[in-house]
Amino acid sequence: MGKKTSGRTVRSLSPGDLDWLLPLDAGSFAEPWTRGTWEDELEGRLSHYIALLEDGQPVAFGGFWLVAGEAQVMRLAVDPRCRGEKLGLFLLEAMLAEAVRLEAVEMTLEVREGNLPARRTYDHVGFQECGRREGYYGDNGEAAILMRRDL
Image (spheres, rainbow, N blue to C red):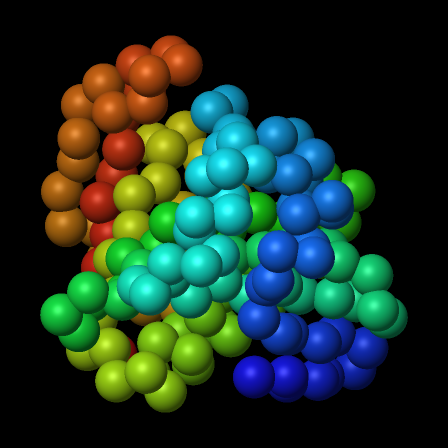
């Protein structure tokens, strides 16, 4: 992997990315992962994580687990200073392409009910709501919207 488009580069995440990844994760999620969790994730045989760089600077990351043909999105975050620039869409399309390359047949995810920008992005690339989990998020009890897309 190493896709480049107009200053944007997508590549696999590595443990060397943790110095910028941990603060971005902490600034993007109410329940950020620890360094140890990230180290385990980046070494996991089911895990596939990518970084999005803009002009060489990291601006987003995302990844999924691939299990029995299902690519389950685990994380996707864009630097708050760069939100609104369609970087999440670019990253999601790269994740979809990687899942197809790995022969996944579907991609699934959970998204906070109130995260309307993310939900619009998922809708835009063909994800459909397929369920909900009430009280899923431990920080505020918000529901998770389950979404899926055939690949």
